Image (cartoon, rainbow, N blue to C red; front, side):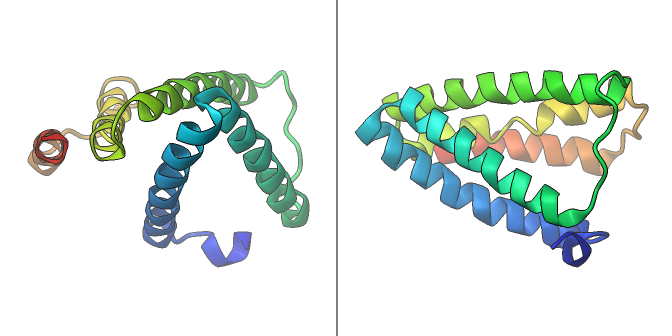
Length: 142
């Protein structure tokens, strides 16, 4: 699987988008029926099992846990877990058609961080994309 997806960012992005779309609907359905925390727990457990299965067949070596990138990845996991619980709580209490577009604005944050912290280029196209994403989320939430 890793060889199929390696070096294909557009394909991976499209697959992730399709899978996250299905995930959002499943998250709403399960959160409404078993609660947002239980739904989050099942999501994390089965996500972990999926990642570990793909990892085990990929042949990738495990990094040293003391390296800065590994520590940052651990912090990212904590942030992702907290974001998941917040998302599940939001989707339990709100409409999927409102919550998903609002939380779908999250790429704006790393885009800004990428410019500020990673020195990525600021282009008029990127600025237009960020503004259009905000407008789209507002329109989808109405």
